[in-house]
Length: 236
Image 1 (cartoon, helix red, strand yellow):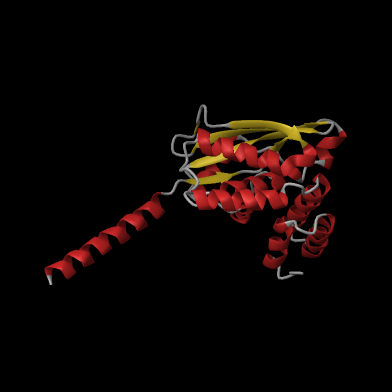
Image 2: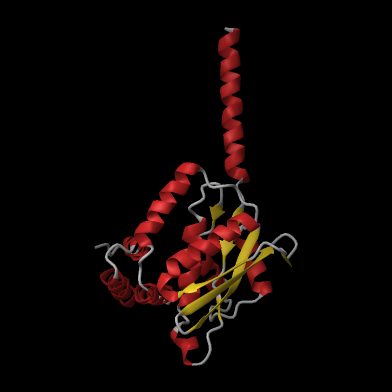
């Protein structure tokens, strides 16, 4: 009887520990990036503010030890609070949104392009102190036609610089396999996907569906637009 009672107690403690671990997972959120492209490219690449943030969220979410706020939730808060969504979101807005969604760390930043090269620079704000977390940001430069790999690299840097939990081996292997399948997504498809997200956010479902399908046509194995179509009830 004592052995059974002891076993039950141990099982209960294990459950409490696992629950506590799940609750203690650090929460991060990603705000839309500021568009620093110059000239005519600024308007042309504006949708990437959302597209890059969305892909960064997906890369960070590959780590099961981290809770990442979904992009749709961020958009809902921006709409509810009537905050700017034109690629000019400041530190105060970043912290405010982070507090609302319950994120300890809020990631913001900029992207810029020159010819076929893109630079992504990210900053991290602590929503409890409203201060910049020095040394926690990340920066990467790479070819626009390898944008998926570029975003994944900067996400990996964030994971390290923020001292987030290490990605378990199984999850790491799965993410590497997923990235290998998506690594060749062309920049054209990413632009179509980004434009589709913007149309979706503005309530233009028909246009969004068309653009998501065009992104898939440009790269049939592109998973992100397929998931978005399912959310819209317009799966292939």
